[in-house]
Image 1 (cartoon, rainbow, N blue to C red):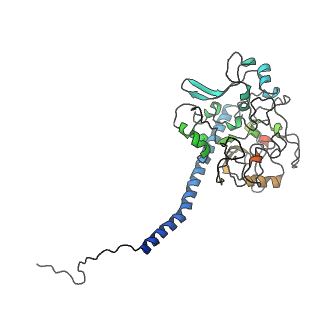
Image 2 (image 1 turned 135 degrees about the horizontal axis):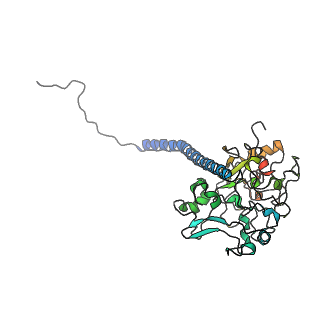
Image 3 (image 1 turned 120 degrees about the horizontal axis):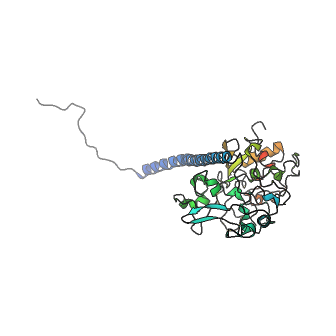
Length: 376
């Protein structure tokens, strides 16, 4: 039987036609438009993922804080001797009281890294290296350099949660990724290479970075240091500071119990130390010497550091929110410390709108507030 093709369905060959220049330009323009529309969404999604990771880190650190407190009778993390307030400074402490445990960072092979305070006074029998200039990392916060030959104003153990005394509760390493926010690129560029190492600490002779997160030094000190018991006046000029290194405050450096927090939903416990959200184009702060220091979280009005609070919740807190809280409740951070009225390096701020040292200099310490609730 012969099969005949049906009319109207003959096979036809048609010569292909190339795109004209105009058509190519239209296609390119459409692609460029799609990229322009999608790129911000992609970048926003990536940024959100990085923030989510940082929030997750803070939740893990909050759990570590709780475990530490459970092990140490509700105390907060501290490396400061409870009786350090009996005398004025390191030398007097070593001479008159004791040789405290050294500030260990971790083991690397057969070597141990740490901040040591020398072999004078009651430390003579141990032969530790270094000297009292390392006392700056034995106290929560240095309000000034008096009695401390190492200087270090504004530094302290609050900036080093990665030490062995605390990293034991995290991942067992100073450079555990949990201690570093994924958006903290200034730090990560220097030390991310250490993340895969098995040692408790690593150092190549050049690159070292403290954690992206820090404790609240105000909460690590006795509340009386930052004004508890002095005055409840909301005035910015109300008394709000007693020198913990005066030798007249025996309990100044004894870390308060977590139970002393009066506003656990309003008092920050740990925070991203550097400005990581809504950042300026230049990540290095020209206000500091050396050209290596990033902007701090309180250097921009639109800065919104991720924080974990004493009740365990975690959120982003904009600096403007902390400032608005003061407008409603009066002074919430101490202006009369040796840091001055601009607080924690406020003179190095990016803009003139920002003026806050919440978390760092919280008035009344652990008994104070950094923000207010929705109803004030």
